[in-house]
Image (cartoon, rainbow, N blue to C red; front, side, top):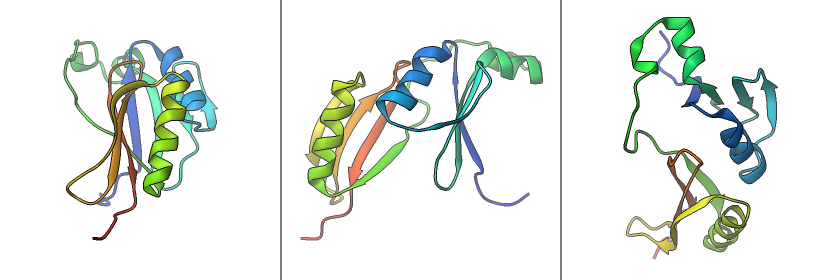
Length: 132
């Protein structure tokens, strides 16, 4: 097995609001839409959303039908300058992202903001590192 991630898939029970969020709010272009599986154009690793039902059908594993709670993962979106973090955060919140934390300079030297998708997954928007 090659030691690299080739695809990140976010599982959901309700794909319509997730499709809208990732395509319309965050602006990812859809390259494949099978109704219960949607893949987006992304540089590098492939990126998709898929219903838990589909994964259960194909694996018969019970974990795809269990209700989960709590943050399991985070996606982080680079935007360039600290000013671009402010702009991107305002835009995606205006378009429907749930605001979690407004942009702020972090101790690790990046301006960072946090938003959530329709299922409550918290994601990060961040700037390039600013050297003091």
